[in-house]
Length: 418
Image 1: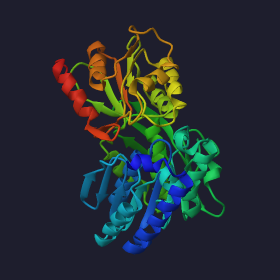
Image 2: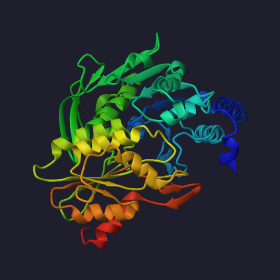
Image 3: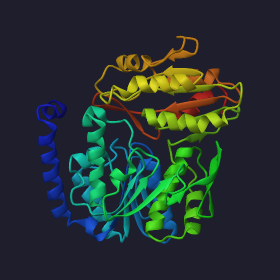
């Protein structure tokens, strides 16, 4: 019923409703963001990992920190899972969270902030001390319609912030650096950036790189995780946090659930779980994986696409995977109210592989994972993307329990591979 009535009103009208709720929530809870230093993190990919890195750096430097991200919440020592499937909370939930952070004596709040929340005025009233941009690539065009509209929505946070941290390697980074703002630009390509990562070393079990003479080690694979770490270091630079302290903090992050998460097993197969749901995320994922691929081994990629979202990206994701993976298994992934097989049809348009030989359609996600594990051999890479650390799968209004890593471990057990 709620879905039916929502479709009766244009988005601009719904945005006015969200604005009214945000105004009321701010007054009700006493504008708690004014009593905190708010660090907002936005971008198409990398937001969640970046928020975890920033939080750990702040904690290591002795700060009291609250965190609200796609996967979890934290106020001081108290942590709990985000089961809402939303990146940014509703105005009432968010302001209540910030008020609780203030009550418990927090100094900082790191808030993962979506383009939807910015466009819909759900974060009205929040004063951002620092705005962080990881990147902007194709996503959410079902909502924003154009890339220009998508970028414009994200820019709102940077116009409000007192200082900004921006990925210099993205398209038109200066768009997110308003005049007279304190800014830090970071890069893995441009030596002229304020923060430049050099002497990069990549491995499935971690990465190493150097910034301004300090050697950093991450317990997480992937070039894009170096970018996420650089974004966090940009925040550290603006807050005058010593890089030696930041180095210890970053190294202590054992991994972020569902983000390039390696699942141990006894067969010599590298099993990676990642949230990647965009063409750009696929490109970056493969850029990190291909240099580590053993000659003669296979990459087996299991993925689908979310229902009722940007349909134009689906064949692009299929094309990218088809160009890099040796075996593709298309499967179900949060169809919501859309017919699941039609989503797979859309992805299939970009795939150029032989059906039932190096390309399979297995709608049941558990069966798809079982198939991938059963054909994997020593040295192969099994890449499972789309769900990450989420704990449910959406079928219409129903939320079915689903934990990707748990399912992988159960299927490994069945095959005697654990």
